[in-house]
Image (cartoon, rainbow, N blue to C red; front, side, top):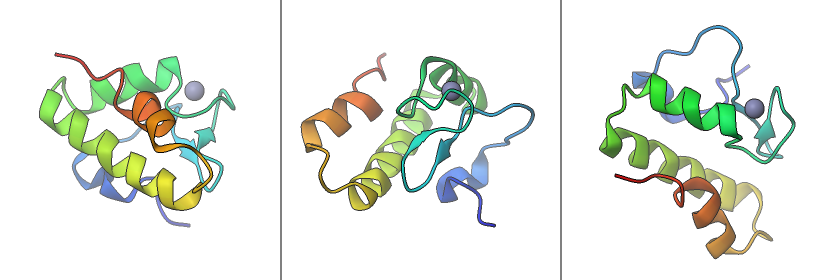
Length: 87
Ligand SMILES: [Zn+2]
């Protein structure tokens, strides 16, 4: 079974993970639209707080989600995946 997020080559995943379940893109643990609150904290931790890595990671996820869920308005996807990534 493939890893839920292909671009995760540089990201170590361990323990209980708030990662997206495809193709619904809901959290595996919370069943909320990913990234959930704990999922965001987890991504920040996994990327070591590197903002560029974080933004790139979320951008790739957003593109994947847009392909999987073409009915979701792009503005909603942007808010969900990148709207919380701040400096
Ligand atoms: Zn979660």
